[in-house]
Image (cartoon, rainbow, N blue to C red; front, top):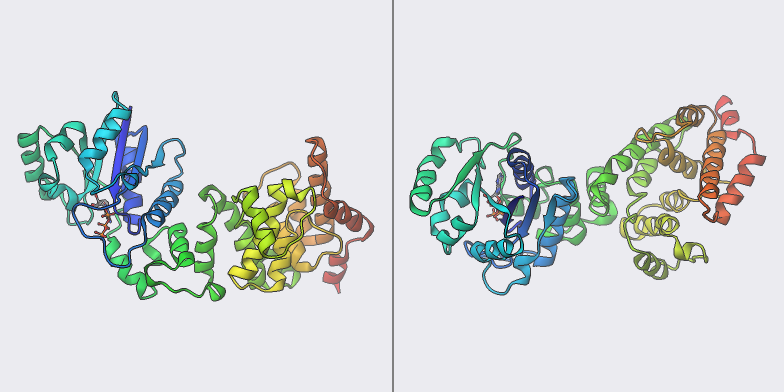
Length: 406
Ligand code: ATP
């Protein structure tokens, strides 16, 4: 088994780290990659106002999730849990004890590689692991590494593999910390990491969460969900805007509602119930055990009370899962966009898409009927709002088509 070990201060993790990790997994054919944020970096002082280890761990987890290699990429809190300076020799000894048969590969950029002989116990480091080194800048050609490759091989018997990062990003956390404090830097961060920084107000960002522009709102939303959900959220955003345009609704409102509609999707039942209590949302007996139903309600609360969104956005998100009788146009648009966005594939989706642009109420009825039928087949209880929605849309014809014809 080949295990890559990528340590750093990750203060914050940026696209340079992300691309390096991706390249190492692919080039070395790693079975596992451990991302290990250090607790007390031995080689540099932690800058003032650095977020605590828990934030750096969380941001590194977001980067790991964005690599989309479940079962391969893991974040380890091994150095956070260990007292004192975070020496790589100690970390490697711990990992070696845990995986005695594994081939360990230590990943590092130019700066770290060229100073490796000055690290604590380099002989132990280079006995326990091979090194995968990569340039951090376009100017870091092979010649930059050559002498050190020879020196480490002769002195410690080190094995080095030099790799090239196909999408090199020339950025450092130091630059980013400065840019973030000046209200910039988003472009060199994964959106989820950027959103996390904004939400937590790290690095002196002081963003007003109630007046975010679209890229920042997206970043915040993506920082709250698993990255595999992002294409769906993006698809819902596009579809909601298209539907709003078609039916004469406010595109911006539809867009913001879509961006935030699933932001609490991954909370636990306890977290949902705590948010409902905090924001005074009543829950019935069925909702109290159904995370899927609760995420619409709590998502609406976060949209309104954290991100300052309007009541129209709140209501659209609130009803996007169960639907209800007599929905507003915006509520229907979000419900339908979530159902038919371009990533969705199910029997009848083409017909539903066609109806959504020709007769929105009939598309709604089709969606609600399908959802109720599926839940019935699976033996799930049907929420009363969905039952009422079904009855309402059955008894009310295609009002939107009539309105559009006017
Ligand atoms: P700082 O600016 O705070 O010193 P940094 O950007 O160098 O931070 P670290 O967390 O210290 O980031 O780096 C961890 C590892 O990632 C190191 O091995 C470093 O060489 C490597 N690395 C950092 N930035 C890049 C980059 N842009 N491209 C490739 N590798 C990088």
